[in-house]
Image (cartoon, rainbow over all chains, first blue to last red; front, side, top):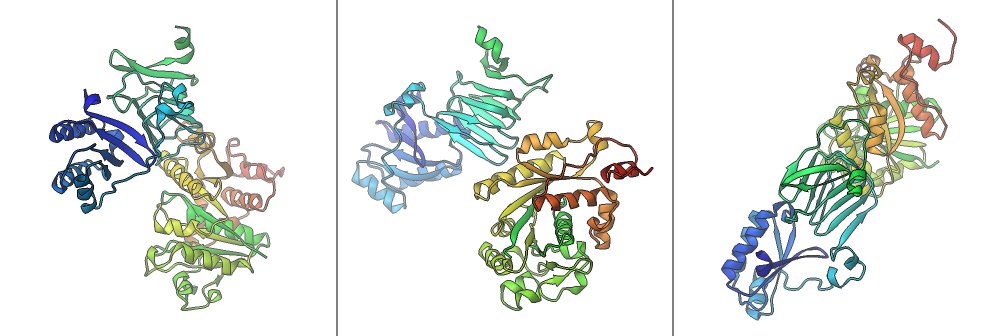
Length: 227
Length: 267
């Protein structure tokens, strides 16, 4: 659906949204709708919007900026090949160029091993008050404490105790999984499904959580691998 | 001499930062160290009350920082222990009256003729906390065995690590072994397991602590108090000595426990 209208990429210091050709108003609506559906992911982000060769005036960009700031998103830059749009962006104090050397996941031979998605690797304890957001996967070698939050577009793997809040498949990927050596999150979300852990019985064992028939289901890792 | 700056902080209020500062300071001074305790909680001063020095205050931390007095004029000599000093905070000002760089400058000025500078941090993670940790060589995070206090301690540890102050050490305060045994309180193991930092000491719940803070006499001066013993042990550990943790689990009666702590055969 939105795939044809907009494309979202992670870049060095923010999120880049490429708005494909077509009527601006419909594309803008599609963008805002996409953001609303993936609120947790976009909230607080710095957004770069690439509008292609469209000629947009200050009021158009101002209304986009206001709509974004209502959603707690900071419009950082508008990229365009049109001089009119560039001038309008500058009038509004928006950047018109950003670091173009973004990590392009598809072109990176190492990342291409990971289903074409980028992953972040964190070797430390993620403590209360820390929030890690990433478009690709998140891998933690350490504990995720209560009060910490991990939000990933892809999968989340915690080689340690998982006791904070996690959201895998935050962009809507229902195939996303969460694995941990001790899966006791405060709250676990996959795509748009939310669950809380039942009280643990007995010793913690490695588990994997995924969606089954629209329900978040956690299973023993050893049983999972035998299937 | 070049003093070591030790900041005592917690995130949550009311877990015992001020009591710990006063007692660790007193215990170090009793072992012959020259110690200054700085109350960095500007606007809500109470280290002076706990140390029983309220009526001797003439100048305070803000006066010293703003140059209204010499630094040694703001240092109040303790009435119980020689070589223990207090720099009280200002009651009528707020936390923005000094900056982290003021604290670093002040501590550097003090370093040359002290062994230890203890800083009592205010609760929270705002300016006052930033002031308190800025000059620190080492940080002690204090918490109670309560879920909310541990959560805040975890947050504080994260901030301290992000400031590249090294891993702080943990002081677990007000542990009640009876309640732990009945599964009504987090155990020391639960807390250490979650926070994953080095445990400096455990101070048991002890009514005598409240009485001593109200009287303005540090509990470390009471030889029979278990909490006082815990603070004395913490001071020894800070001085690099190996002291095993107090055994709080066994023994029913108070004197029973004490006699075991001292290894004496009486009773």
